Length: 153
Image 1: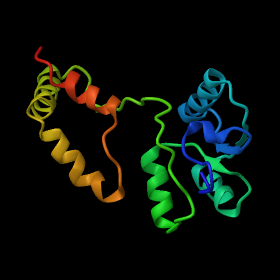
Image 2: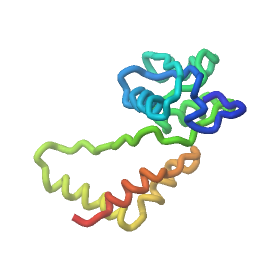
Image 3: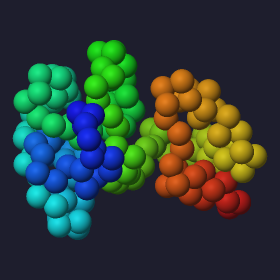
Image 4: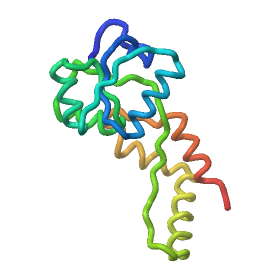
């Protein structure tokens, strides 16, 4: 969002124009949250992230909804200090590792390795190493993923 008085959480989007990319999970998440929280905002569709961010930079829209890591990278590359990231997590997006079909031994090795770093807490150090400098901290949802990922078979 463009920084300004009263822009502190998702409720701050009420009455604002928010850029979205149609057909994305982010677009659906913001629509769902607006409906659930009974907020009225105008969603303006753009073909890609660069166009949505450019509209925000020009002031054509008040906010832009996409992945947090992407937003942080866009803000840093543009050196924009007049934008703020709202603290709300609107959805949880699971990620996956693509493995060769039918290679159960490799899949077991990958899952065992991941469970070990989740169980020992090493995942927090790894996460911090790559995301701390951009101001990204694990959310409660991510903590739950780390916990469940470390459960024994």
